[in-house]
Image 1 (cartoon, one colour):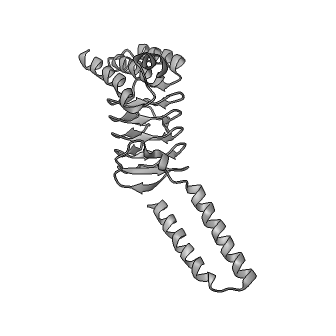
Image 2 (cartoon, one colour; image 1 turned 30 degrees about the horizontal axis):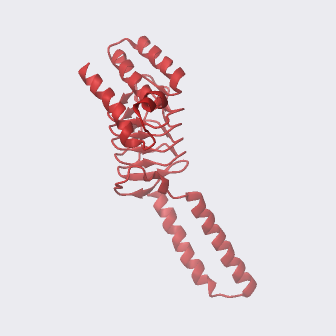
Length: 235
């Protein structure tokens, strides 16, 4: 019971570190469904691990009605996890969430298999930030301190200290990042590709109209940029 209470206290206190909008304890108790969902999960998880699985599912079913967050009581969730806003978050039965993970609304840690008794859901290691609407599917691993861009769909492992974006998600940056909330700096892959296409069309049109062969050098440089971009996406 002492360990459970310590975890709940951490669930309550982490809000003051992760959300600058909070002003009072009253707000904490009335405006943070993610916190309440984790508290009920920790209670239900105790029942689940002791074999009272129907009771555990009932607790989390009631929690889902009041918070809009669906966490299976069999999931493994570490300490100081913060579900910000939280509406629409889904965490499956065999999902593993490490310590200090930050999860935004509409995130799904889902499975892609119907096999019983096997691990079907993701493992999210310590310090990961998962942007709003991201879907992480299958028995894959998101490495420690990585970031998943908003609305990304992740179906493959992501190395530690990486940034992954897109559908399907691709790793577009590797290396440690000291800011846990810098997911607002994620590049817009679609915009970069459109910029490339527009510039290339402009070069070709200019060459056709003027007959200027000097633009071929500029096109060659643009092609090198494109090749480097594609190579980074495949890595």
